[in-house]
Image 1 (cartoon, rainbow over the protein chains, first blue to last red):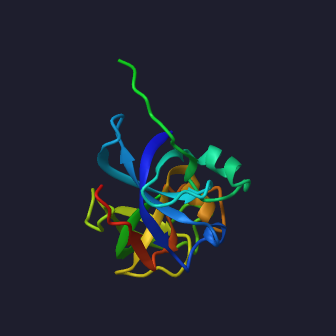
Image 2: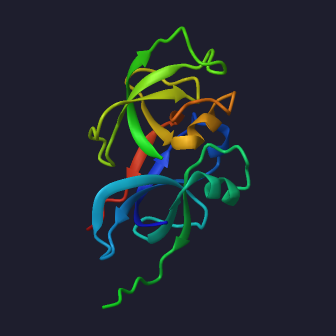
Length: 90
Length: 93
């Protein structure tokens, strides 16, 4: 899984049926110090996350399909948690 | 999933069984600021409505084929939606 920060939302009317009524979040990926890596992902929201929040992103299709409970969903990235704290050991 | 811009169409008459009728488009992946990022990819059109110039989002890997009518086909990128708009939260980040 990856750590990201929600930078915005993607609005889409014409889409694959499983995306209808699902919120799509544009997430900047973060490094271990929570700085943006420059890369991003569009992920389906599964936890009610909002802009600016640090989140846990799953980027693997099989697990994504389990989470949305649809065996044939063309979804790969899902926001599966909101990060309260990230602590690095030293 | 990632953003992309449709930059062309790909026509292939001879295709693997299962891909008949599937439209292939050339898609330039984009950054979150909608700037080109990396090399264009050939993506199957999972919404059957995308055209050149359109902003889309694309799913890659095994999940791509799940966007198509026939789901066990050799496809690694598929367009799963047309983007109306991207609402960026312009914070201090």
